Image (cartoon, rainbow, N blue to C red; front, side):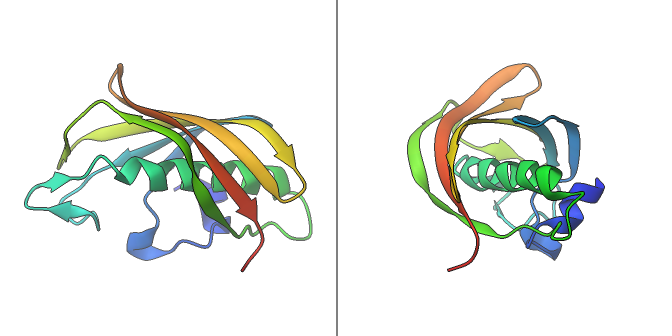
Length: 137
């Protein structure tokens, strides 16, 4: 597990990301394997709507990267909504490995918007834009 993931508020089965493959100031690429014990497996399949949470956790990991060398490396925040979400698969199967990319498009204080994409191999399986807020409710 990448050290950035330890700074997210998600733990145990609620942490959907397995690794951070690449990260910069404005972009991140993460990896998730849908194993048999993955929280969202139902009758051998995973709903493609899980990508919303993958997008949000990837954005949180990017923010953790930015805060890593501060006195407050842990991040908290929440998904405000999705401006757009296009899903190109009916379901994911147990054993599928997906890569999620998130790129910050704008930020204003605690608010930010990310354009996100999810790939199964080389195939684009979902894309959208999410709005997030840093901090707690």
